Image 1 (cartoon, one colour):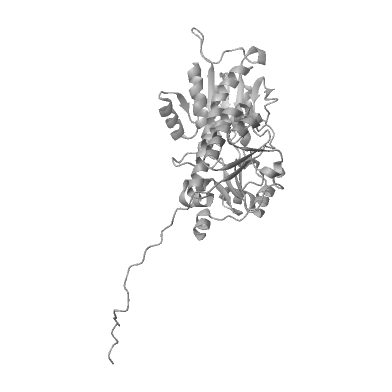
Image 2: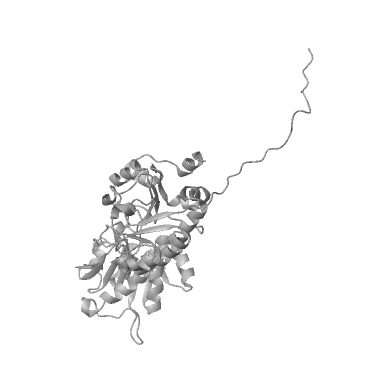
Length: 404
């Protein structure tokens, strides 16, 4: 039996077809809402008037709730002159498709949130509640967190800025409470010719520890830094450009140094969950009377056993004759600087989101941004939160790939 030959005819057209590529969409116009925060002692605002002016000039609309910037000493007039719409009704601000908050979403926000809204805010893992996450899922919220917002350099710009502010503020606060008028030792933080320098012990060599070290050295203090991450200690030496006394966290060495210091700073924290307690009550009891502990890790439980939460109104307490300063959210005490730092990150990000055609397109194009997304259209995409509350986890990469 003869095999059939392929049929070739001039009526067929053999032409290559064009490949369909992922076309970048047109820029999206953003409608942004900035509410006044419910949270106690939250003085920051996520966009400065200058940043609002840039966004409005680029065709975006910004609604700011009445007196939202008051804690950072920005008036309604400042925002109005920058092109924002001032709104007295809180519910009206929450109607904006994109909400910018300088404090985490709280239970009071829930009734005001809209379906399919996008929220850019901190989340504060240690203070998260399952009921809030459940409500966000029900409202199909897309959430981008300050803590995990990653830039193209692989760093976390908002966390870094807030840590720098906290590290810089620590030396100012310590100097204030060492004064005789604040029941301190009556010593000047730093060094004076002919007088031994003030001794500062810093536990933690991250950004807070590095900034605090830099400022303490600039004042002339004697600084000793502890951390169990040897790489961080090496990096600290390299960034400072000088050799600093460093050690891993060995209890006997740490206890010996704390015994003779005037200032002890706790700047150790885990990425998630509680900060490790590395300084026992016995070590604190052996410290000099009138010395001061500043526990920056207090928002994650603190790394001194004697620490407990204080406020900006009543920032210190005395235990074993040692002053304890355990205020969470130190940057809120320097709200204008902190607001400008947050604004410097968010304003360029919002312009980039607009150029990309919206946040969903931006997530598709920018791999680093995906780390900051803890919820996408009601699907929980943060593994830690899903494990903490035993909720369903969805891989963001699979989620966005399935929508293409």
